[in-house]
Image (cartoon, rainbow, N blue to C red; front, side):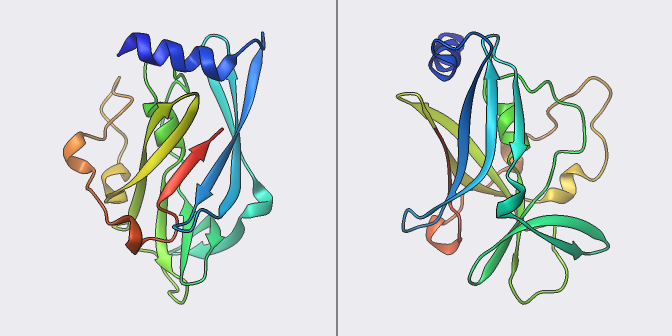
Length: 174
């Protein structure tokens, strides 16, 4: 696994000494894309993610601010991971997955249900990262993880989803 991830880092970095910038797209079922962020990856595998503010609108939901992508029937609201992570993909892609979490709501709902969490499990193919949608209860992140534990989500916390039932079932990073 480590060899695959190191190959991924090498493909992301390419010949750029300091950083390679990739665009993160949210993709609907028809293949239409929204550029939602950029990821700058260093040659060591650390990265910085910058959300594309122009793609999002401000919403105040359930007594807190959210940046949301507004879809025809659903809104996809970004949930910045509130605890420490290393932002390092030299060993695996989990930190980047944590940076790309969302919660969805119907376009007509006034509040938000944290049960409707969206987690994209990333994989690499030929230098392109793709994230397939899994569902999760975001309430699992309402309390900080135990001291020293950077990744509190367990495989059993993530649930398979029917991609056709969601507006943005895929993330693509290229």
